[in-house]
Image 1 (cartoon, rainbow over the protein chains, first blue to last red):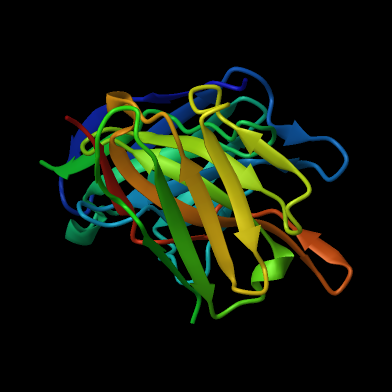
Image 2 (image 1 turned 180 degrees about the vertical axis):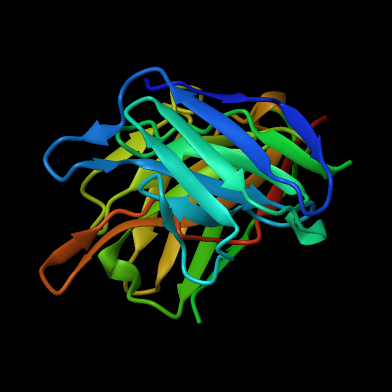
Length: 113
Length: 125
């Protein structure tokens, strides 16, 4: 199984400041035949299901604000919120979908400082 | 609009059974692989099972293998999860989610792009 580890477990950021979440996979999730990283990021607000915000490590889902960006390749990935807004308070999960089981990271809680 | 609506959750005693359903609409259900993911309230996301578009390929998490059965009825646009021999540790909100799909000769794997609202399963005496 490809295990996903996120850091930090939580972070508090001032409104308008940058938030950065890291995700590391125990094996590469880069598919060599198409050069795509099978890594997704989800946002989950209290009482709601997860919402896909980034797939293929860096492609924003339709409708997701451009303050959200994903980067990285192979085993190390980052989700960046360039200017934190109040509505971005949530738990963020990374997930690999390179192989079964498609495991999630443990989550990172983002709060306002 | 794409909609996934879970039902069938509730309170069940340890050792009991429950069948969850996920009604899909707004997309061609038979083209998509589907997944079940669960979440203990306040905890993280745990993948449970997946089924491919025609039901010929199925996978389970080790924690539910031999106890849970995933299935689908493409004519009814519905995904199921039969849960037997339930344990206290199966208590969670269960979500269905849409995954990989092929259409028009092309295939797309953008992870889990739509999720239902979830249904709560509580296993307790």
